[in-house]
Image 1: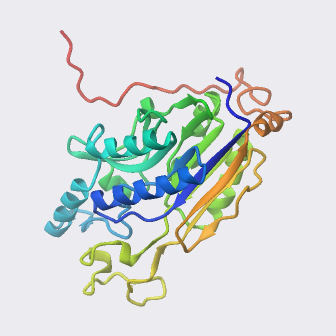
Image 2: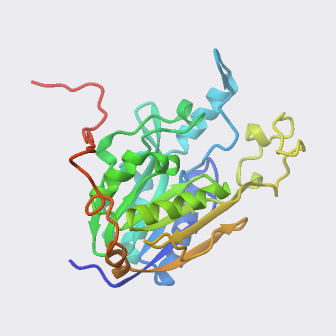
Image 3: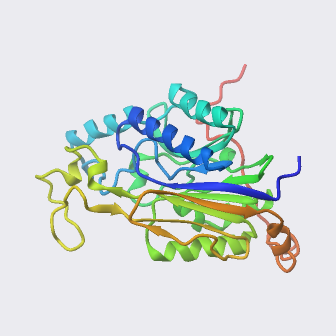
Length: 323
């Protein structure tokens, strides 16, 4: 089916109710209804929206030592995570189906004894269209999240265009981007937890390189979005703000910076800082074809006789049982 000429999208810059899955799902449902009422056909939530990005906490682990408090908080994190399938996924599916929209949400996925940073794309009919696990967790994330595999490195054909996603610093992996380009990604979703000014430049580069629309969506969260006894921000904590002072409830932990970019690298919206808001943009889909007049990373500007890339799309299963 040919996609419409203009697609309205919503990038949700908001914080979850950290470590509380039920209340975070309630917030997602409310925001999805608001965005759908405003005419959005695709609603994108940040990385780890269900139910926490554990800012400034490595769960009391250091080289050679793990503390009991950190194990207890890891168990809390696990309890607030999302299994696929599960009743939590059913809530997301119900929201998408009732409003006839696409919803992508960043989840902390639990599978066996491991957590994964995952992007879950749900279709208008409530079905799960794509489950992408972050291929490489960044820095201290590697302690608490497992690594994804190539089976989630896909692009989905929908009635609004071809949708693909990479999470946060996966977007700095040229091979991962090329895999999406080869599959014809048109609406490139980039949920993240990076509020550095240089991130905006990266998103513009990717949009121009891939000749696609890029939706960069980050949360904006404060100390008050975490439980009162969350170790980094608890009164007895030795953790400090960059200026050396103690954390206060209204202090901003993640400043956001969500925005939408067109296929020539030109922002359609400006980065939003330090507040929660739904950012809307109209994607004029013919601009994708127009942008490829002079550049196509996997076509007219490719040299497959010189460079090749192989992607292993097998699931990352440790044990296979055969008869």
